[in-house]
Image (spheres, rainbow over the protein chains, first blue to last red):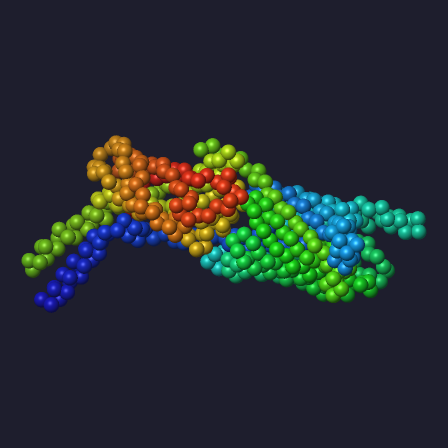
Length: 299
Length: 181
């Protein structure tokens, strides 16, 4: 009898539990929706942190028009308005991604008259459930200088290949929280033609990039590139920049202080010739404007 | 032993109830913000609403990041700056159909649904007008309503007030079938 009693209550309760839908939201318990795999977004605000590339790629059908500008050195003094009067370097670029994963871009930099082109591919993407804990992006680029340089009335660039240089990068990043992201970069820069006979053509760089978002639309950024090998007897320094990101809808505005004057990987990684130690740093800014080339659907 | 007989209607009723649960196999939630400056639209097609034809209860849970925008950067801004998807990953609605409808008969009925709409962590009581179409055991629901951005404490910076509509039009459509167990 006791057994029957027990069975009775179990059955009644199970029946009641099915009935107990006094709230409509309980209905959702009846279907088991698995949480979907999602990719972490906005590890960094844009494809560059200051000078360095981030793991980010422009969104699908996004055309990014970028203006990067660097002023002269702070230590050029009051007469030169601490660099704002002159020694400007400007890069204008158009960068596009069709699928939000693979992107390419072309740009022109004023100093050394460099035309550059690059390819960038998001190999791995961090997921929100950390089934993939990191993002990995590959980068490769080519630079061509159009500068006329004569040394003792002889053209410095005898062949087209003398004008070319390259950079290849592997970038690994993780967004640790909404606010904090960190990236490690391994890069190699290769110049076909270097300044001196003893100079090496290759420079290896280990870079670290960090971002801390202190409000919804603003962040503090830091980047540092350590040159691993000795490639020249000339006085060159590691690139270090500190910046401030402001996002304003379609624009991202980045202001920063960096010791690198170059705007292309080949120069800022390998030939940064001023140092923070004597205020050989400069003010700079990047403006990024993304245009969506996707047509709006009619409602 | 008599009590066992008492059990039969309870179980029969609960089984019956089970057989009245519908799940949205196809569902499309679209929102549209129209201003002179810019139009913004996004569509979510992965949500599965649940409906109880026995008592008219209805519930859905839409993942914010599953709204696909025409422009990828707008999608990023939507999740990061406006609805704050990391803090509030879902928009939910739970309510009840006010009209008594015979769900076994084919036809289209105008209905109202009263319930709670939760978005950006702010829950508001709402009554939504729509229609229910029944065709051979399949239930189709359609509704169109407005969501006021400010009501859900979604902050729009003064710079973009001209680009984002004060109230966003939401279009909802789902085709529901009996839940298979």
